Image (cartoon, rainbow, N blue to C red; front, side, top):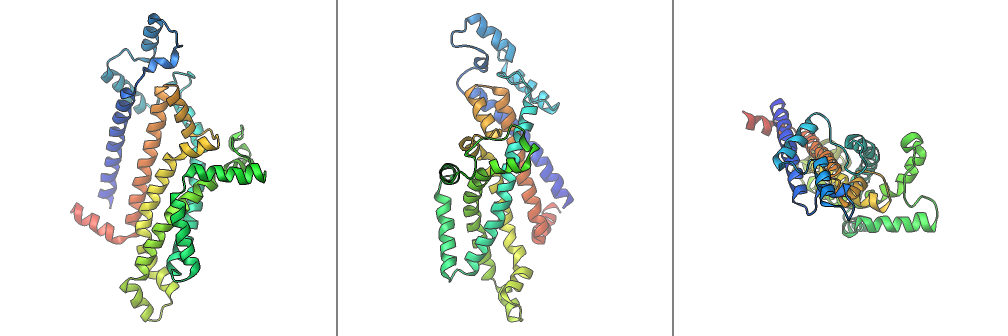
Length: 321
């Protein structure tokens, strides 16, 4: 297991290095010039040349790449072309919105999806099991922004119970008020994520309920809930853990949509603004941090699968040997 962790850690570092190069290269393939962030529409050639020199766009591409990589290794994501502020502190501030939004929604969706998926599988022959399965299928087809707009219409505009968007200026200084502003964004993500996760939980549960070892446990006198809890829960959780990792990463990447709907000052809105302003350091910083978080989520999900399932650990040991 130790060798596997070391190998996966090395793979994580190499993946991040490749991602850095890809992010840098793709931004340079986009139309426009980084210096445009500092220029007006009627800029003179002298002003354009000065702006390119200021942002380093006049240097060879490989030199620009080496400079950026050196800055990142030193813990510096650069300085915004537009605001003149360091990118790293801005990213950290925005993470204070995006991370709580993502984690709260993820935990709630995981709990609800586990309950819905298990009931839908365990009571597949009952009307409510069929209804839950149908709702899960329907929820996948609904766009997340549409869910957000419907929730705003009902709970903010019609009932006036919750704010339709925005975020407290003081941030988490008043947790109750902050959670009030995050309620509708979280509910939006939970609605869509629960529908997606419930399908996988239902499928994994059905596989376990139809397995020979569970039937054997029941023939020896165990009740179905007890047999599932003791013998089937671990096997059912292994594929679900992988999906949980994918869903968490997807939610993090898709925060741009929810944050746009509810005007939240998170990483998503920062990325949209930076792209509109051709603010390359901010774009690179957000994409790099997001990519790192996604890779870490995949790394953690992979390790958790091996902790839960001894067969994967034995397979890993056999491969290493």
